[in-house]
Figure (cartoon, rainbow, N blue to C red):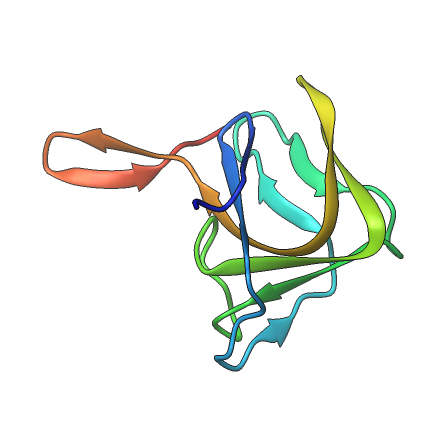
Amino acid sequence: MSSPLYRHGDVLLQATSAPTAPLHRQPHLTLAHGEVTGHRHQIRDLNAAVLYSAAPTPAPGRDQFLHVTAPQATLSHEEHAPIRLPAGWYRVWQQREYTPGSVRVVLD
């Protein structure tokens, strides 16, 4: 059986088990920041979740894990309807696009 997926604009979250590799706690709950618009995909309630990165200095849209510690957390963005995520661990990806000669993270 596959893990549930949640799509929120150009951000994709997949339910997963707790990561076993060392993680670095982030001081914010912004999953993706729009370089063009300034909009953010973020968890609004600071007490509902914790965001981790696989690297001490994370690259935008890469190797992030969200741990929803409350019964649910709401993911919001200025241009999308909010979605509720149940408690648990999620791997977070930011959509990428192919251009001839490269693959890059989608800019919001």
